[in-house]
Image (cartoon, rainbow over all chains, first blue to last red; front, side):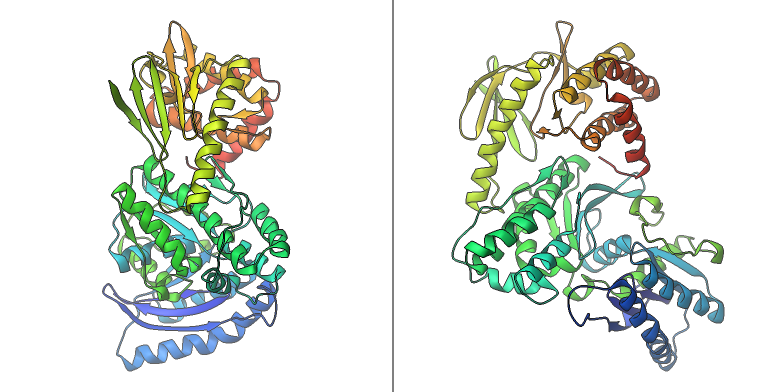
Length: 324
Length: 192
C-alpha cells in the first residue's frame, strides 16, 4: 500500500509517500520568518504558494517510479488554523482526483507513530517537545493519554523567547545548545514541576534576568539543565505511573543532544529502554503523516469529506487507536 | 531490621520498627547541584506540608526526624482505602480533602492507595508531590485524580464520587467552583 501524506501545521510544509517498509519520496518547503518567530498568516501564505508545485513534484516522482497511490493523508490538527486549512483543501482535492480514500491524521500521534516505526519501540512513554507542544503521553486503554503537559508555554517557545531576549537568532534551541557547551558554571534558576505538569514562562523570565548579570554561556547551560530536568522528571513519573518499560523522545526540540542524553541516563537507572528516532523524523515531516495515514487506513479508518474539517485544538485522546 | 516497603520514581521507603524512612534517590541525569537542591527542598517541604495538614485537621503520619534527603515518620499500620472503600469512607475523604484545600494545600497524588484507615481514622500519606496552591485549577486537578482512581479501580465509582462531593462541600466553601472545574478538566481529556 502506498499513501501520500501532507504535513503543514506550522513552519514546515512537507509531502511524502510511504509504504509498509519505508519512505519512498519526501519533499519539503520550509517557511523561515525574515525576523522574529512564526507569523501564522505569513506561514499560511507560504504554504498556499508552495503546496501546488510541491505536490506536483511528488506526484511526478511517483509516476516515474510507477507508484499507484492508495490513499491521501493530511495533518488535521493541532496547529495553526490558516496553515491547516491550506493543507486540508489540497488533500481533499487530491483524494477526489485520484479517487482514493482521505484520512485526517492527528499531528502529535503522527510523531509517535513514525518514532515507533523507525526505532522499533513497542509501547513507550513519549516525551513530545517542539515549538508548539510539550507533553508526556502514553497509550492506555486504546488512546494516547496526556500524562503531563506544560501549564503555559512549550519548551521550544521558551527557548525561542529567551534567545530573542538576548539577541540570538531564531530558532533559539540550536544556538543555546552550542553556547551551553562552552559554559563554565551553573546559575540557579526556578524549577517548576507541579504534580505531573511543568511550567516554563517563569523560567524564561528568570533566565533573561540572569543573562544581565552572568556569562551568557553559563545561563544557556543552566537554562537547558533546568528545563530538561523538569521534562525528564515528568517522563519518569509517567513511566512509573503507567508502568511503561520504554521511553521515546520526539518533536523538534528532541534534536538537542543533552536532552536525549538525560533521558537515556534516566532510563538506564530504571532498567528501561530508551528510543531516539533519527533527526529527520524528529521534527515535522510529511512521512509521519503518510505513515500514520497508512496504519489508520489498514485498520479500516478513513475520513469522509464531511468530517475532514481542520481541528486546530485536536487532542491525542480524541483518537481511538485501533492499530496498536 | 529495616525492610523496603515501597519504591517510587523519586524515593525508597523502608520500615524500621515503628517508623518509616523515606529517602529521596539521587538522579544521575540531573546536574549534582540541581539534584541536591531539589531533594533537600522537597524533603523539607514534604515535612512542613504534612505538619500543616495535621494542623488543618487532616491526620498524617507524625514526623520523627528529618535529615538532608531523608524523612523519618510514624508507621501507620492501617488498611489501604483502595481495598475497603465504602460510600461512608469516601464522604469522609471528601471532608479531609476539603480541609486540605481550605488550608491552601494540594496533595498532588490523591489515590486510594495513599489513604489508610487505622482505629477508625483516615490518614493521608505520601505528600511527596504536595505543594501550596489556592487556585481552583490545582484543586480541581487534585480532585480529578481521586475520581479517576475511583473510576479505574472501583465498580460503583459514581456512588463513591457523590459521597465524596457531599463531604467536600461540607468542609469547603469553594467546593462548587472546584467540582465544576473537575468536570471541565475531565472534558479536556486530561489523564492522570
